[in-house]
Length: 237
Image 1 (cartoon, helix red, strand yellow):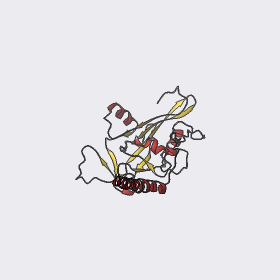
Image 2 (cartoon, one colour; image 1 turned 135 degrees about the vertical axis):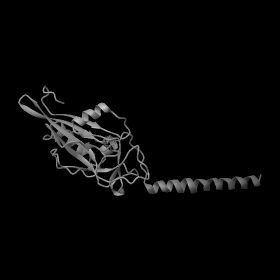
Image 3 (tube, one colour; image 1 turned 180 degrees about the vertical axis):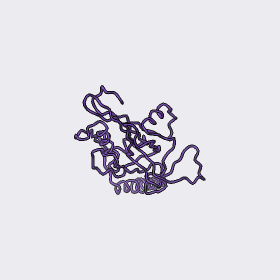
């Protein structure tokens, strides 16, 4: 991160999950960058601010303290099963710390010591933080960034590819900023391709007709008629 031989911006991004074990060496490194990640999960108390039936699948709010060079609306930015991230200092020596994303203030923390009878304090918790240092190489000064993301699940393909969430757009823009390419159109776009294309299409009405009309009514009726015909034939033998 502090190499003067590298003529360019450099970034280390780390993601977390509440179930992971303690990593003291990583924790010590992050504290030098003003970041602390407790072993807890951010849980939402407002049903309108999380999705699925799991209140840890929260929606976070993108912060604009750090300008990453984009004016895109990142609505419905989700950080499911996120650790909270504490900021230890706003500025120290050449380092400056910025909150990238924050939960709503209706959230609370759950850890291994939490009980169902607890009445936890509700607050807004950081779910993504960036600390920036400056490194001089030759005659130019470059950025050295450490980014801590409280959620690993936010990078899942289902979330990144879904147009409902702003995760895909935001992480592309953040990556461009982190690599010093925010003023270019460079981006990797992945289009979903259906590999198992269905060769038969059936409407809901046709499916109901087939299921009820054929299998529930027609086939039993034919079996009953066949039974009646066999019965009458055997009576005349």
